[in-house]
Length: 323
View 1 (cartoon, rainbow, N blue to C red):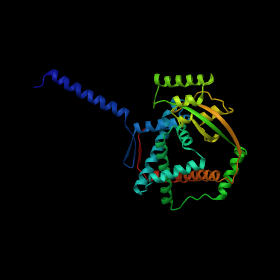
View 2: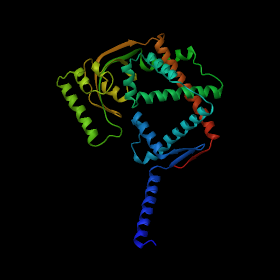
View 3: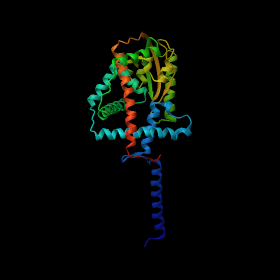
View 4: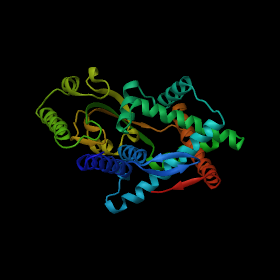
């Protein structure tokens, strides 16, 4: 027979396991079911962190609006899940070679060196692997829509001309390109407290040394974890509109050889030196400008078609939300 003490021990174990299971369920529960596919709260939180990292301005300043923001992100996950299901159902495949070609095309359109490309991706809060994954999904979505709609999206020369004409009106007749050198100090994912403080202190110490006449290239080689550290952080010329808002704001108005203040970004801290400034007239006949305009118009049209298609798909799918 079990003694009273033994019964109490068993009861304590059972209660402990039940409490642990209940606590785990609270932390990670089902927030949506999409045609039988489950979306967990942990997946939602990871996506929220990604969105906030790539677009810090999207995070609600008012904490009471956070549930609404989470619901918007959940809707995005649901649409991604529906798209993935259709890609699998229709057996659409995109190879690594095709992703390579798309990335190379993007570099050519923007005249990016490898260091410039790494910098642009990094300042957007992504790794190269995450960026490539996004390109792959973009290609899959394009092929999916072409197959579903049974038509290709064609951008005419007239549309490109109109786009470039509007760009001239909006930006003036000149384009500014900056030759930049970068010192980047990353913070680890979710870093806070002492770890984040230590990185910020180092960034401000480096900045103090630069203001005191320190050699930017030497300090970049010693400390930078960003692109081209062996070249002193020099990433070459980059168009002003390709800069992240925080970086663009930090270098606005700076002259050649000026150094920015310390810039806090989602992935870490930047110090930027303006090596040179070039201003050139916009030329609507320039092939790279036209390629870039054509891609922008293509993306705009694909987004419009996708919004129409995904609403129809949602209407005929089984979606249960419990957030």
